[in-house]
Image: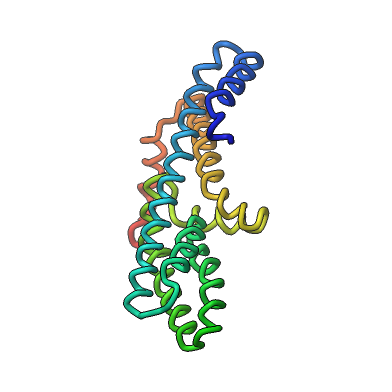
Length: 201
């Protein structure tokens, strides 16, 4: 319903902004909100791409290993993979339970397959896709998911990365504003790092 009414909601939001924000600040608000919208959109696309790849990989491996219910279990694993890193484990639980009723060996095979698949996704696929789409480092993505899960459970894990991406962007804008007031450029900050041999650490 929110997506269907998106235009009307945005119109109402901009009426509120124009009513309460000083006129000279409106272009800055527009730029910030546009960038936040881009970050959130990129995250959704990146997470969907990652989930699709994991779902296809799960179906392929289950077919090779001749495990039953490959389409439905792969669909569940793919959908839960919208939660980076921990998603495949959450999605694996129904699959393991279903396969336990058929054969404990098949359930164990599936569990080991998910463990290997999660390592590939968590260490290679997801950080690259989500890092490119949100501009965040893998460390921050893991931190966002962990804190989001602690605060809001599964919903918090889903919303953790886009929330931290937006907050990171806003904090970077604030830092740029503070540095410009002190007339300190990014190149001057980079010069301060020359005394540290960061590549060898």
